[in-house]
Image (cartoon, rainbow, N blue to C red):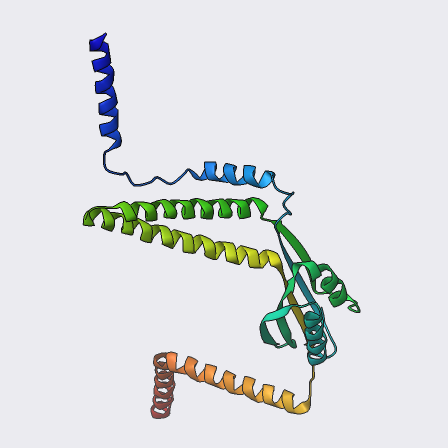
Length: 260
């Protein structure tokens, strides 16, 4: 009996010694597990709304681009949106303006209906909705997983008792913080795309085709000059043949003159 107790005591001591070994660096939880935990936690709350990214494209002809721009700018402000970019269109057949508007998701439908009101024909009229709910959950789960790992690293850093251990932990923390910043950037971008719909607005005026005398004269002069330059360049490339033909002609002329 004493021998059995002695064996058990030895096993307990060995277990305690193994537990007393130096701390190991924490391991990141598998992504799939963290996503499942995030979903199971969310399922206990109220039903989460779908995460949707909405986009729209409108292109149409107008009688006055400046007036249309003023009208659309007021409409964008009315629905609490903003213009993220603006560019001018100046082509051979038309001039106009292109706006990229960001509209709050809750006002998007009303803004769309108002913006197409009064337009008889569209060059482009497109809408799209991209459901990114699963991606949003995935990014959130990854972020929570990384932050949880960061907390464990910080606790371990406070307990480190050697410079080499501290340097190793700090190196891992630096990589981890880089990952966290990258994920947070993706999450901010996606949240912005969900909160604000993107609408590309293009409106233009067609240029009238005119054939005035001055324009015809200028076109004819330009074409004639270009033709002259082309012939001159061609002659420069063929000068040996031209010189040879000229020599043959003059030789024949001289020969006939002497013969006569």
